[in-house]
Amino acid sequence: MPKQSPVPDDWEKPFWDACNEDRLVVQNCRLCQRLQHPPQRACPQCGSADFLEWKPVSGRGTIYTYAVVYDSPIRELQADQPYNCAVVQLEEDPGVLFYSSLPGSPVDNVPIGAKVQFTTEVTPATGQKVPEWRVVG
Image 1 (cartoon, rainbow, N blue to C red):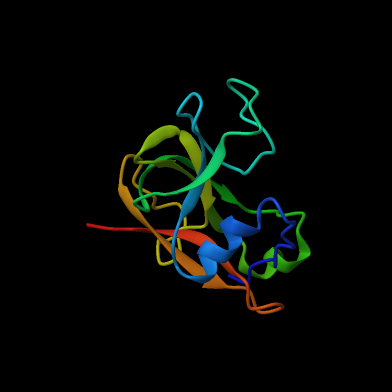
Image 2: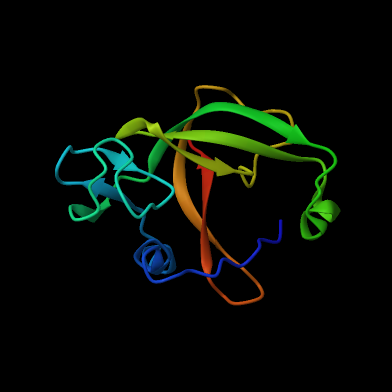
């Protein structure tokens, strides 16, 4: 499925740079030890903006839920309809969520609770890699 190319700004650039290196990082607040994604300018738990760091994570997760998209408003994705849209919980913190079309998984055949592994896909417009998840095991 073709991906839209993100346009990273300075404060989220480390996330996208890590994706280009096939690594997954999320923000961590050193003050309260909360992981967060998507990137934010301050910790939503304690409000600190001075203690955020980028933390490498395992890239393992679990499928929490999913839906099948039949009528996407995004023109670039319409040719691939229907497609999966899964919510993935990060192994290190189930409160950290990612979305994925689960490349390689048949439409509407997504095992909730299945283990997944982080991977990347290249966006054709810019070459920026974006996060994706694949069912493992």
